[in-house]
Image 1 (tube, one colour):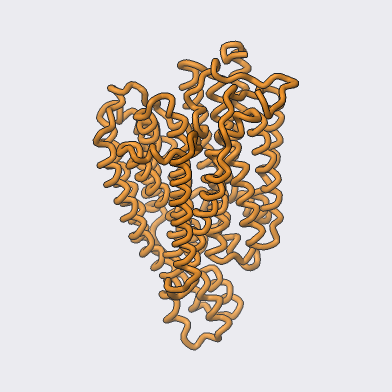
Image 2 (cartoon, helix red, strand yellow):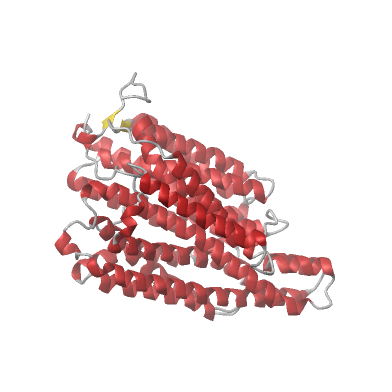
Length: 542
């Protein structure tokens, strides 16, 4: 069976099913940001500390980043439909677990399990799409599929706001279950079990080293926000061990004949530098998104639905920015479009340093729209151009590296951004705690959310004002650091793109980024190189 053997209606239905799967991931990526303030609430949520909220966000991204490049090999061995369905089942089960988590630790573990499901879903999703469509229809299908990212980014915060206004916080996770059931029915009825006749080896050593290295590094960085000095052994030791484990991971992958994550690609100036720039951008985006959730709902007092609606300009900008950026790149050049766009994105993040408790919402909305447009104009065109610098047979491996670097940037961004906020907040709130009873003082030091709660319980309105002022100051300091990191990314991108051919010359840049491409060598395959598993096949052999 080949792609051409599938009727056009069948191809369209498969695409619809795949878009539902992709939409599920993007919805989950965005609903949590609206839920963070509620989770921190001692009464309505889980009384989660800033560090626990960092882990609730980061544990998902951590497992997603480190397992995604292994999922493609699993698809080769067992069939991509099997891997996709397994990922959906894991995602649904862990969503139920997250919805009924009794404390922050359970939520963190459930979120990590959801990341495992997502890591299985995304590469299999694109692998099936690549098999189903050929020629110009494939580019069109990728473009249509990529719209699920924009829809998910726009719908997620609003959906979360509606659910939080009417139900308990667990509903934002429980809503995933009916979507998964719908997707599983479509997969069972419509999708063949495509898989490669050549089985790639799994990479358990690389998987374990990458997970343990990133997790240990993130622990040290997050722990730094909880203590008074970085000289503590439980701060610098995990950071050092994490860096060593990641160095060993790179060394192991260099020695593997067919690595799941190929670090050699990062040695190429254009590809390596471009991916570093994208990683720094995602670092900054994750950190500033973390701040924005607490600023709108905590400091400004917006309801979840109001905060979700306030975030719509960012999603709209990102949705429009990708095609606009692609058109401008074709007219001018990649550097002339993306480097200024990344610079503007960095400046909009630094502009959070100008936000206060009475900043007009209209100014915030305009800034978020510009920020979204700038980010959209960078990520899609740069990713497509970087993949086009590689030989066709390495495009899939390049996609795995790109997606892993981006997710890693997100993990570290959440850890560092949250840690800066915690350290500066604690120092800023301290002068306002003189004469306050020690139990109240200890709770107020944890976070602005805890300070507001204990201030209300003990009838100390002045402590609420002090917590708001301390949080805004912490956000200002963090925004400046984030801006400089994103500006550094723009400088790296400027140098990296010096050797990239323009799209008109290369002739291979698509208008849309294929989100979360398949690991290893899947992306360049055609229908002739893949086959659907037949009934009665032993999935472990070919």
